[in-house]
Length: 261
Image (cartoon, rainbow, N blue to C red; front, side, top):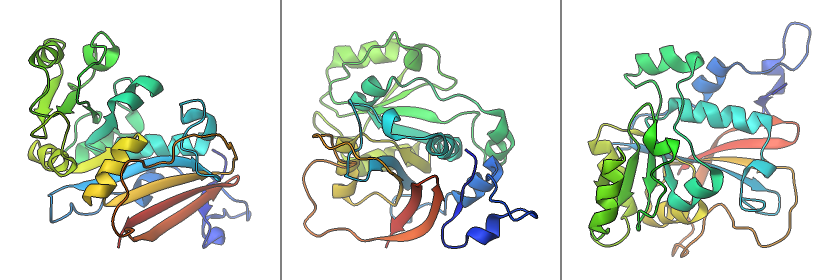
């Protein structure tokens, strides 16, 4: 990333020579610091997604082709600030999720916040049809969580636990209840929540009214086709209003942060 600055006040981030400069990781961490947990749930649920100009959240099933170096820099910062990263099982498969790594640049910040060396990865899965031989389950710094419903197949639950994952029940049926996901994670001491989708999971959080913040990268690309939007599933009865908290820009990419109004 070469330059990243607020579009509303670009001159504030120019150096003494009048040149735009790159924000440091410490400045990004300060800009994206979590607020106090939501009083309803005891946690703050933030989503981080990317979309093209024509609304595609993916290209060929993955988000990487519509991303950028600056987007990945913010992606890494948001992970470093979170207690837990929540992702749907299909996203974990498509994006090839690995365990979150400890990053020396954020070690002091995480220690001061009472966090472990890396965020927990929490996989939302109704079927638990996951490959438990992957590093996400065999070699994480902290045990991977699997969020599922009470009706999950006992043999799959046993397989997950044998692989070292911790299974958390967050629903009475086959799948999870989004509100219970947030409460269950808060009950485990995870108050800084980050979801990276996919679209179906984000849509469930939106429909349940538990999403507190959306960090949205608008990629200056057009893809056409039939790719998913950032959120899918049933629509809400009344569109939910979010307020713009900050807006950054680099090389045509916009990085917006919106909070529940």
